[in-house]
Length: 367
Ligand SMILES: *Cc1c(COP(=O)(O)O)cnc(C)c1O
Image 1 (cartoon, rainbow, N blue to C red):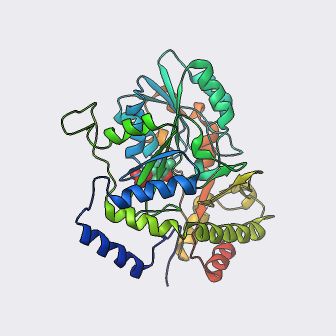
Image 2: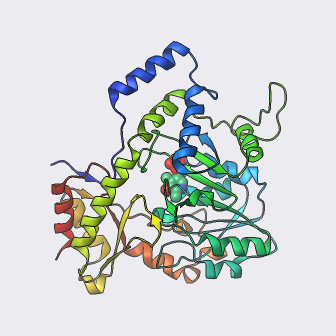
């Protein structure tokens, strides 16, 4: 039996990919800000409705580089309910992550809890638009402005998400994207930083190329995180089909919601008014008492029947060995995050699910 996986990569047409590979081979320019790299940056700015973007080799290096670029030190307020790379980037910069609980209505950092976590050492806030659901960016900006803090959004899940026609990626000082194979839009491995002005882009372009400003000048402790021509060309091809992929995901979400609404003990998110969602994930939350089965019992029942949901985000980042000793990592500080992590299953969600896949997934959840 074929397994139904939680995600499946969006792949460009192989023939078209051969053609662009031929172009790259002919040019003999395979990395270092080549023509496909430039074309992909321009195409992404247009598609995402953002002014400036800088491409990276994955979605973790833009997080690291964003903290470097803004010279963040001391403490960074963040969410435990995310992929572990969010907090790791803070740690790798020698900063201390300070966890704030989430709002159970969205899964995002609860803005009402940010102020209580601010100390004289706080320099930045790193929220995540988890599952692509937009954070309350206006409230977060208000707090950041009041205390003089920078805001870096981990927008790895938020490719193409818009609020009232404006890209969510324009919020904050910087936003990071991830183009990993498992995400809505992929360049196999890849990522990006979105910024507001040309000067910041220039600095970040230096930082992702060892800090080189020119042949002889190194302006800072840069890293190597340049996207190559092959992945850039692949990314250009995938961009042509990402809207169709998001539409297909939307149809899956509609089917799931129709079928699952009314099952006692199973809840999920509805669309938010004014938001263009990307349907990157379809999390459900299992209340064991009401549902009559624990989350893990359902998770393994699905797995035994070939439906590979994933418990994103369980365990919480704050429970991993690096972080669990931090005062803000205590269970008492993060009750909502624990509750969500202990009840979540992300159902299979991608552009190529067929009716039989969706029906099987639903039938395993229906009691
Ligand atoms: C996928 C992901 C990343 C990291 O992306 P990579 O490209 O795998 O390094 C960062 N943050 C979040 C929230 C993610 O889901």
